[in-house]
Length: 139
Image (cartoon, rainbow, N blue to C red; front, top):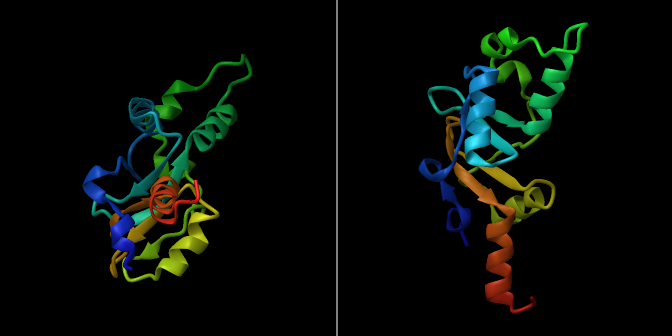
């Protein structure tokens, strides 16, 4: 079996650009209702993920002495300044199902990239669990 079977294609995946402002990233994340999202360059090269916790820690660091968030910083800082790299390492589209399973145990989703590093899509733990439930009749 090929991992493409489990793939949610890029056009169906909500992503953030690494050069989005923190404010824009927060707005897009709120609209999507996701708590973590893939981050790409404008050329669709996968660079990592960013989550609500990353934004929260950034905002906490931006609180002034009076307890107010420095909102102008959320309009200047970029997602790339907030995100943690390496938290959701991708697999290539040619990865084996065994490689994919090794990653899906550790992450809610696994980004899938092509040979250039461009995001092809994601595989979610939910999709894998649905497949197991449907095909193994264990749940």
